[in-house]
Image (cartoon, rainbow, N blue to C red; front, side):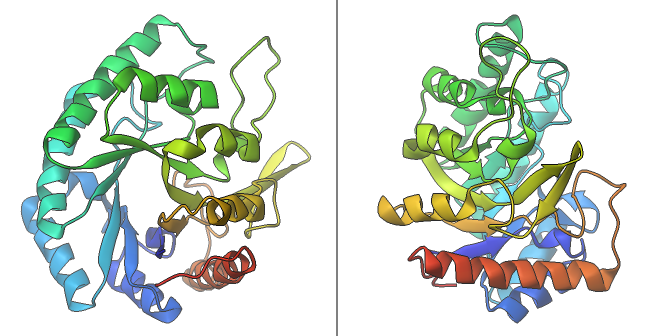
Length: 294
């Protein structure tokens, strides 16, 4: 098994991201942001420069962390942009021999139960995005984020069933359920149970994001793995139990939160928290019986 991480939580400077991976002794990266640009929007020339720098440092890209169909995009308005970024990403992924691309399933303005009209649009869009991936030997990983398919495990399973392609699998984020309502039954909706969600979708999970958080006084606090309500150790134990040979990636959110510019930290705090997080996760994984090849 390999361990990797969203190193842009340290800096969007690729040299610093590489330095952190070397400090941890890791050889893989979840490539998301370089010099202020998401990987899915890099030009051919920009990506070639990124790939050269990674190759020179013996770092491999484990996943393209794209913005395709993400929490900031509307299924009606953003589809053309998503397809353009998908085409560009596939071209770059082939060059770098990358199999996985992280996608989502569009912003929801309000809770959207199964069977809505918006659901039909989301699924039709995802079918076209995934078909493009399938035709090119790429696998889309849908993340259980605050988008249509992340509203419950029922939504994620419906998406998989309707798209019905070997090129659509799941990336499960342990921390997202802590902050995401379970949109099923009657209101008021409760927050999701990370362990329950994972157990329901486990057969389709091919990648894991490690994040952890807890609520205190109506405020969400991100924390180190095992200190929150994300059931990190239990989920790692299930991965070991079922022999799931999947990449595991850290996305700490401890010093900074990628999508929340109001959360700031010094460069030293960003560096130290990421390195500390990575080392703690390795220890926790070992406790669950998982040893990384790095």
